[in-house]
Amino acid sequence: MLNTYDFPEFDYVQSDEQKSGQTVRHTVVIVGAGPIGLTAALDFAAQGLKVVVLDDNNTVSVGSRAVCYAKRPLEIWDRLGVGERMVEKGINWKLGRVFLRDQEVYTFDLLPEDGHKIPAFINLQQYFLEEYMVEACEQNPLIDLRWKHKVVSLHQFDDYAEMVVETPDGVFTLEADWLLACDGANSDIRRMVGAEFTGQFFQDRFLIADIVMKADFPTERWFWFDPNFHRGQSALLHKQSDDIWRLDFQLGWDADPEVEKRPENIIPRVKAMIGDDVEFELEWASVYQFACRRVDQFRHGRVLFAGDAAHQVSPFGARGANTGVQDIDNLSWKLAAVVRGEAPLALLDTYHAERAFAADDNLLNSTRSTDFITPKNGASKRLRNAVLSLAESNEFARPLVNSGRLSMPTPYLDSALNTADEGAWTGRMNPGTCASDAPVTVNGQSGWLLEQLTGGFVLLALGVDVEPVDAGAFTPKVVSLGKDFEDTEGLVSERYDAADGAVYLIRPDQHIAARWRGFDAESVKAAIAKATAGAIQ
Amino acid sequence: MSLKLTPNIESPDDFYEVLTDAQRDMTDEEANDMNARLIFVLANQIGNFEDLKQAVAIAK
Image (cartoon, rainbow over all chains, first blue to last red; front, side):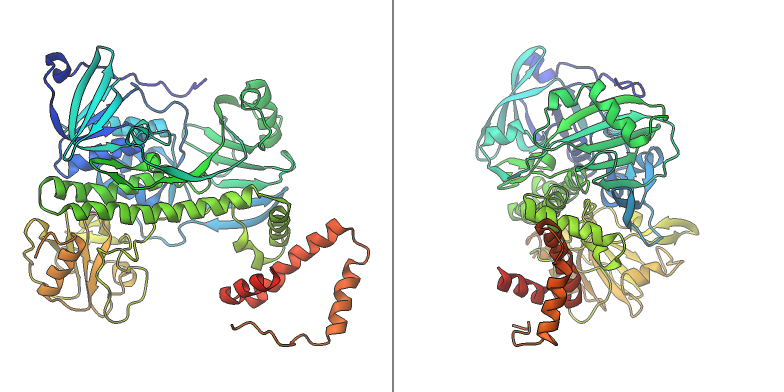
């Protein structure tokens, strides 16, 4: 299988510390070089931290696995210098169609507004994404990627974690001030720490198949309930790059995964969907079942959890990898500040508060989609089918159709790091929300607002004169409309409700910490103190 | 409690007849399917989430 992609094999290199037998204490060790671990390595390095990444394998993800990457994670990857390549290689899409039998019942547009650098969604095979990030990691002197390194035991002390690591050369001991577990839904680290990982299992099975075909289906997400070619179940068709298409067939709980995975059983299902006369080759297939669950605490002593190791969702809504990348966005500046002694440990605990809140939002959405797609009993199925049959000719029923609510950032509206608004504001840029992009002009060149909001805290001045504010390690960079950029299309003013002037304090992860109608240095300092859990007075 | 819980249906006997007549020739399965669709038609008319939650609680 896999005719369109040659898997790289990364070299195992014995580390100096294993050779010498001298135990080394590292600042940060990341376990797992999947999409989340690699993102963490790049983001921690961008914060100036030295990182060691351990992975028990020596290649990228086999099979395309995660497919849909959303705007926010792509913006994060863009900040880390790998996003443009992903967008270029990936397939842009924003339209989804939902069918009942062979009738279209619902269409959605994921990004109804223009003026964003990054598209709403791209589809890209996970192995490309990992390959690009591995290359970027290899070029970064702060990142030490170690293949064929498997953590076999873990012991925590007050201020560090000790691991026994197995390599082709035997075992050795390694220490870390901080250990970040990005080792997936079946995380060994989570088991070693003894963290609870609870939630809901779903009794259903799905066949996922990637095929190569040259076909003129549009670049849209097509989802069928009860299609004529696969009665009584659901199905999905979605395009990836290099003429690869993702097909997904609901099979029901009684299906035998071993039998369903055989090509002779998959091929008739594919033909029924795409037509007998369309030529294709089967590239990769897998049968999966799923659960929606999360870890009790995102931090256990010196061990932190991110991505699927922290939360597992159903695939409907593309909320797995996408939310994991946002975990890292949230964690990296906090961890860097704590490592450098610039902020109290309390800042790191807001990682749990904010990302557990986001995980619960994802779990809720994912569970609701799953309940719609695979109803739990006859009554639920009757209600689901009533919605679908009404949706065909009645507009009012269409918002109830749930074939997956696609991943959007969860605003941290109740976060302790936010400063509450004074006065009335319109639009979406409430404290705790991820800053919206908009087209700008910088030195006569066209650019994007988010590209200006990097490198720590930012004080974004929109039509208000501001002075530099000294907040020690968290001194914000001032970015002023009219000086540092022009709002060529007026979209910054519109999206940030700034027609009457506005000042925004934006966190290093590009989330709004506070905003005001005018400038007051003491208010800005107080908001930075709040947004850093009291790091400054 | 914003849901109307005092009589509000115009011509209750006429409405009841319309409902039972609609289902007179249906199997239980068909009638149950129709009832499910009717829930959503009526729910859309109510719209307000608090009212709908209260209605579900009363029916349960």
